[in-house]
Image 1 (cartoon, rainbow, N blue to C red):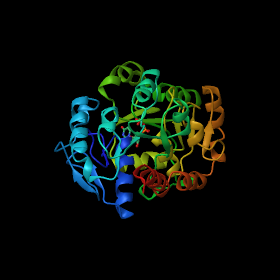
Image 2: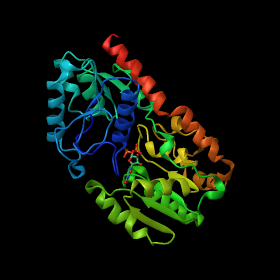
Image 3: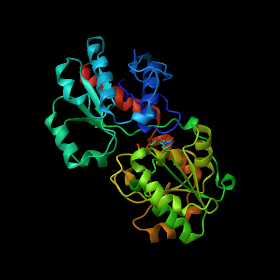
Image 4: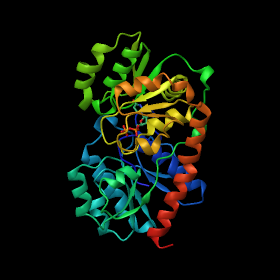
Length: 336
Ligand code: UDP
């Protein structure tokens, strides 16, 4: 299991890929597989940990040097593995054909024309896994081994019924325009609702935060709480009346939606990317196509049963289901 090198497993704050790697690594150990995890040295895992770097370095996310070094360390030991499951960005795929061990590569990001062309260039190098049917449809000609939804262990996430919720809406995630935080603010303001915004402000998005979000935060109706601890995150998600996800980009999956639903919190989302696959419209929230519609459905949010939200996540996004999907793919590519 080859994780990105920048954030420990499991992550303390931001880190979608790292949660997926955490759940899968431990689930595979649980199922009796002999798992080696390449990840920062501060990671905690049931697998055998091999670390190229002693600690995590979230401030260096995206710096290729670290990723390439870790990939090289993993590939140098490739003969000792039946399958390598790679979660790196682009560092491993081009070189996967140079080793004999089959490489399964989960596509964690969105496709652009250039990214699609990159994977076409290395078409036969790795066995690709999409994280939503939508993502796969963006570049359909590649060699896919399957589609496996990202999982969540709902026992980690507290459930709160309608009468235990508090009177605020939640917007949570990487603080960037694509995730539509400014639209969440508009919805809150136009409906007179309180909104809590939580999330890390990464250096590349600082300008968006400073110029668009911060001037609208008044500490009362619109609150910004920054990057929160895991316990605070569980509280924020489970106590919210609704989770707003007015995204403006082709979301490849969107873990925050399943985190909200796991807590019994309905999701109101724009229909970009994977959203129609991840949210069951009218059952676990509403998929809406405009701010006006989001405002209208917010008035009907009590029609959504929190218990149905949690059940839906339990059925569709469980760790067992994802582990089944990957186990089959591992067996297929290893010729087992
Ligand atoms: N997250 C977090 N703190 C933050 C921002 C995000 O813990 O400040 C978590 C969030 O709960 C989710 C993951 O990081 O588990 C983000 O994954 P998602 O698929 O929602 O978004 P992306 O990978 O596009 O940032």
